[in-house]
Image 1 (cartoon, rainbow, N blue to C red):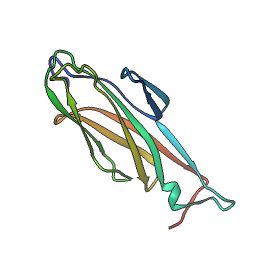
Image 2: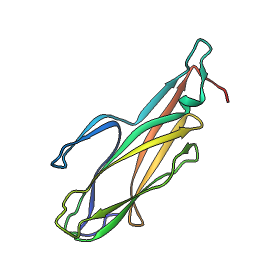
Image 3: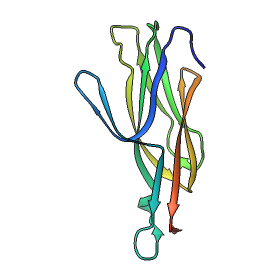
Length: 142
């Protein structure tokens, strides 16, 4: 849902790394929407350590004419990716014009498939970010 006057979502991407300069500008490295997990060892077993994927979610908002405080919430929308909801304060009430965020994500993956991360501004869904997880040559073991 677009709010008249802003703020507006400029970017929402999954990536491996984000470098933020002192002036607030960000360099987004290795943007991805898919992860391939291969079995380790000759038997192709998938150890418990391999069930955690570490990525970053880079978000950027433009204030438009908004001069208010807002809440940004990120929620995994699939039960197959175990990760907590995350909340961030977005404050355009002062002189700050930057709305860049980097959320480190550690996702416990229980199966392959398509996972979604819903991004809310206040209580309105503004976008969904996909992540495709593929398991290759694996046999799951506890």
